Length: 55
Image (cartoon, rainbow, N blue to C red):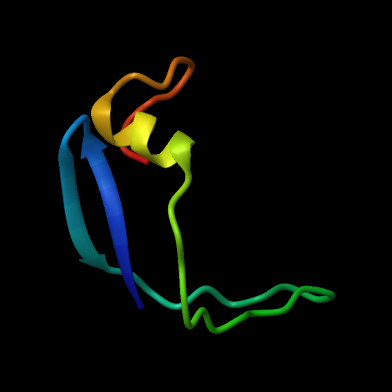
Protein backbone atom coordinates (compact mmCIF):
# COMPACT_ATOMS: atom_id res chain seq x y z
CA UNK A 1 0.00 0.00 0.00
CA UNK A 2 1.16 3.55 -0.57
CA UNK A 3 1.73 5.67 2.53
CA UNK A 4 3.12 9.16 3.08
CA UNK A 5 5.69 9.66 5.83
CA UNK A 6 6.59 13.03 7.33
CA UNK A 7 10.31 12.41 7.90
CA UNK A 8 11.04 15.81 9.40
CA UNK A 9 9.43 19.26 9.32
CA UNK A 10 8.64 20.13 5.71
CA UNK A 11 9.74 16.74 4.33
CA UNK A 12 7.14 14.26 3.04
CA UNK A 13 8.03 10.99 1.33
CA UNK A 14 5.78 8.48 -0.42
CA UNK A 15 6.60 4.92 0.62
CA UNK A 16 5.28 1.51 -0.40
CA UNK A 17 4.52 -0.60 2.66
CA UNK A 18 3.18 -4.09 3.15
CA UNK A 19 -0.56 -4.38 3.57
CA UNK A 20 -1.26 -4.98 7.27
CA UNK A 21 -2.88 -8.26 8.25
CA UNK A 22 -5.74 -7.80 10.72
CA UNK A 23 -5.61 -9.86 13.90
CA UNK A 24 -8.57 -11.82 15.20
CA UNK A 25 -11.44 -9.43 15.95
CA UNK A 26 -9.93 -6.65 13.78
CA UNK A 27 -10.85 -5.47 10.29
CA UNK A 28 -8.94 -3.90 7.41
CA UNK A 29 -10.63 -0.93 5.71
CA UNK A 30 -10.01 0.46 2.24
CA UNK A 31 -9.64 4.26 2.39
CA UNK A 32 -11.15 6.15 -0.54
CA UNK A 33 -10.75 9.74 0.68
CA UNK A 34 -8.66 11.52 3.28
CA UNK A 35 -8.40 15.00 4.72
CA UNK A 36 -6.02 16.98 6.86
CA UNK A 37 -6.66 18.93 10.03
CA UNK A 38 -4.83 21.71 11.82
CA UNK A 39 -2.70 19.24 13.77
CA UNK A 40 -1.45 17.73 10.50
CA UNK A 41 -0.31 21.18 9.38
CA UNK A 42 1.51 21.72 12.69
CA UNK A 43 3.25 18.34 12.28
CA UNK A 44 4.35 19.27 8.74
CA UNK A 45 5.64 22.70 9.79
CA UNK A 46 7.37 21.38 12.90
CA UNK A 47 5.30 23.34 15.41
CA UNK A 48 3.52 20.37 17.03
CA UNK A 49 4.99 19.72 20.49
CA UNK A 50 5.44 16.23 21.95
CA UNK A 51 6.07 14.56 18.60
CA UNK A 52 8.92 12.43 17.32
CA UNK A 53 9.68 12.13 13.62
CA UNK A 54 9.18 10.25 11.39
CA UNK A 55 5.39 10.25 11.54
